[in-house]
Image (cartoon, rainbow, N blue to C red; front, side, top):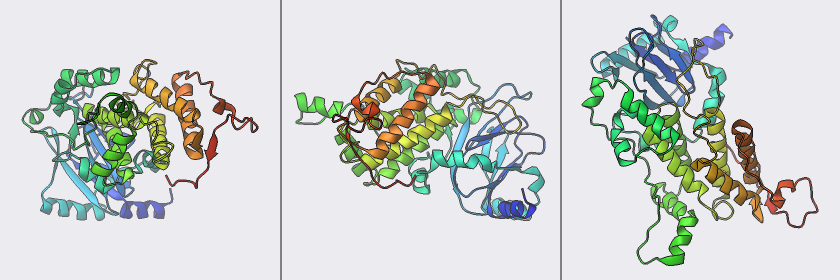
Length: 394
């Protein structure tokens, strides 16, 4: 990189200063992860905006790791975010305002420059696709008191929702078998403030076929949640979906996975909204899911030193043909491809998601709908009417 360009990025970019972090600790930001060496003191040249910081402390030889602890930030240009390792609590803690200011000036004077690893800008585009609906508002609405997210504090979640899927069991086993820092045992963690998504719709005065219909098509529930919980701003729902996915995949939070699963089930459980009231929302939703799974299903991910990163939990065993996702995706694909009128962007992205799952996981959705050949058979009178709309900003 050109030296002048590098200096500009150092001065205008965000700096994450991490003091006294023990060697071999894994420190991650977004899709990147570092193994702490003897001179590591943080990360520089971070683009302004939302990011997820996470870390996992190690034993003295670097072969056993504690559960991941993570937190979201939304940083301004040239901001310096400082944390210091507390050996008694075995976690990163905030500095006093006075110390924060003193270290910020030292960073801006380039006193720590040689001890800061650069943010890999070539991976920033990938992170943007995973976080383009994450805003300061979304983070402040959802983050727990204190900001820290960790499966180590989620034993109550396991008791309340016994693990069912391979994913849930893997996270639960990690919690049971991991060495929990002593600070966590006395930490009164309240969890993230996720939106409540009912699994079954129950309404006073509604019975029989009408109630069954409301549970088969979640459109009315979706509309109610968007109006009541998101103030009619559907992008806040997508922001929560991205918040939960990142907290689950990078932070390995069981609570986050359950929320992601609930939101995905809610949206894929709608049969009317994709074609009538919320076509644009569903196009954006399918794009969000597409990029989440495209990233999550990558194999050989490595840290900045070439070491294998914390293993991805999105493995093939989770995406078995009898998983809840396989059923939801299959029903949704059949719904979209069998519709008589469908938004063109929604159809296009639904097909891209279908191809991703077929090519990556070998799923076979066995679709024989007339819509399958619609672009190749223009005279097919049974093909659905496709409504093309202006390109959506993503």
